[in-house]
Structure formats: C-alpha cells, structure tokens
Image (cartoon, rainbow, N blue to C red; front, side):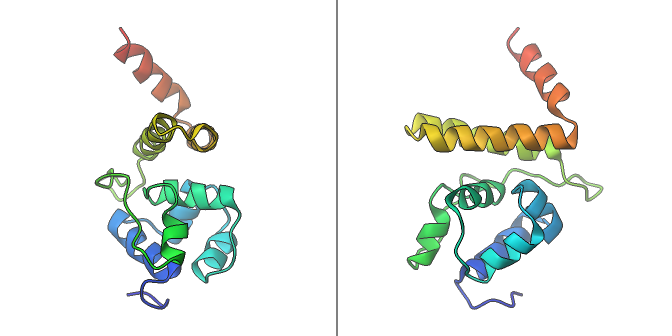
Amino acid sequence: MSEHAEKSLGWWIDLRRSQLSLTLVELATLADMSRETLRSAAQGRRMRAANKRRLEGALQWQPGAIDAIARGSDPIPVAEPAPVRRADGSVDAIAAVRTLLDLAVSLRTGGDDAEAEDTLEMATRLARRQGVLAQLADEITAASR
C-alpha cells in the first residue's frame, strides 16, 4: 500500500489519504502546501509548525498528531472522517471547510487560540480558493435565523 516504512509519517499519510479518498494533489490543496512540501514531510524531513497544523487539519487528525507519530504513537482523528468526496468523485470543498471549522472550534475550546486562528485562516483561504465562501456565509446566516 505505502512505499514508506510502516508507522512512519509517510505511511500514516498514505493510510489516511486512502481512508479519506484523497489524491496527493487534493491533500496538498486542502493542506495549503505544495506537493513537494508534502512529499518532503512524508519522507520524514523537518516541518514548520504551521505546516504540521495545516497537514493535521487536512488529514482530520488531532493537533499534535504529527509530533505523536514522531514519538511512535498513532495519530488520533478529530472524529469520524467527514465525507469530503462526492458521489461523482470530486472533493466537496464545503465539507472540507466545515471540518477545518470544527477543528478551529475544538482548538479554541481547548484554549489553543493561536492554532485556532491558524486553522480558521486555513479554512477561509480554502473557501475563497474553492469559491464556496459566499455559500457558507449564506448557510450560516440561514442557520442563525
């Protein structure tokens, strides 16, 4: 299944991509990083903290999961994976943004305001890039009525 050593970060990334039905390009887009940066991370090269948080969010892992893997632990998912793939096989950008927003709320509730802000910023960038920001704003407005 994976070209990476079992239980390495690359192995876990491949496994989680498979569980979420994401291609490498889709994961890189969701994590707001280049494919080269993602490949480098999967090969065990050092990552900046912001890239770790973005990758954890895109993979729907708890914050700190990448560091936990480095210590030999298994990553903990945020919750059951949100379906980010539609029946036609395309990525559901709204579901991906919602997952990031849920993660931001969890981080804020846990007192990690800086990570919550980073995750919220990532969700906003993804929503803008995918052209779903207005649709999400309409849903929020309708839900608050």
